[in-house]
Amino acid sequence: MAKRSKAKSPTEHDRYIGQRIREARLASGITQMDLADMLGISYQQLQKYESGDNRVSGARINRLVTALNRPLSYFFPNVTDVRAAPAMSALFATKQGLRLATEFPRLSPSLQHAVVDLIATLAKERT
Image 1 (cartoon, helix red, strand yellow):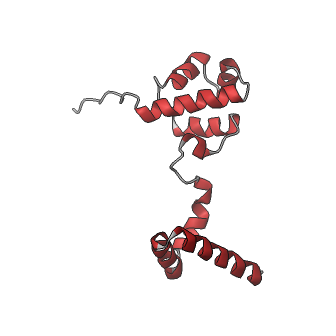
Image 2 (spheres, helix red, strand yellow):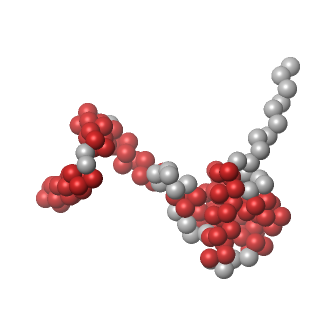
Image 3 (cartoon, helix red, strand yellow):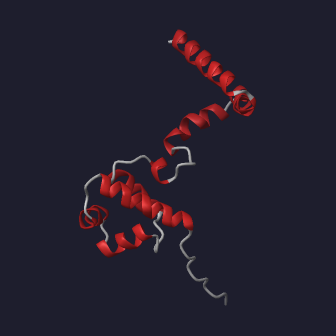
């Protein structure tokens, strides 16, 4: 019988998320008690999240995004907002879209801007 592994210790990223929770809460003028009530947890649990002692689940982060009126990127600055996923799926669904997505990063920043402007202009003319 396999032994259950211990829960992983919080990481630097867990502490970063906790710091962002605290910053957003304070900037919004919300007390720990009030935010904990919004999330359906105890204020002690919120303190553990803010200190980085406990990890925050994905479902809880989803509630935090709503309660603190922050985008998902506030907690994960290097991650594209998941709401962009349908547009990205549509882009990769065609050979041309996949080719565009593959070649685009190879362009210089000024050419990337020019390509985006061209596509926006062409899209406006189509409608």
